[in-house]
Length: 232
Image: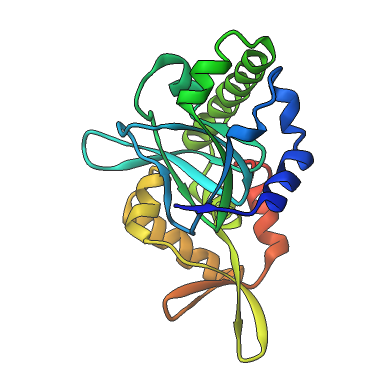
């Protein structure tokens, strides 16, 4: 995590998402801009979280670590979403792992300032209620997807969430790379089933295995398989 001292960029995000309307009081003097590199954690389960983060650029995945040492994908985050909305109210540690899947930016307001100025702010609590309601609906939908949809469809949607671009020999291609053991756990699959499904997607010429990563070669079919499973 890196604090970004760029007032102009901060103000652009505030204006873009109309953030000042979330509060009755002017909270702009207490806002800070943070940058998270790809694969960096915004928060981890059971660790103390000290800020309310407003996710303004990038993508992140949300997952739980289970008692058997495995992980389970819960959802994806994209702008504009709040992180720490439960914790700021209940004074608890983080409930989930939130890890960026591309370079990301968050506007942060410390819990200290929120508890000092906003605990009686009706506009702020309306925002918190809206945020929690949206997440509850999204979690319900994404949990159903994990149970009811075939792995092929879930993999396609997951690939779309983590796809990136790289330049190879003057050609820009769409790629994704992931620890397959971790990916199988997140998607609730065995490693063998995941590998078979990825190989089947290669056989269908939707993706192509290359050294150290996969290349997406048929985005149209991949999008058809993914549908609107995980929203991102």
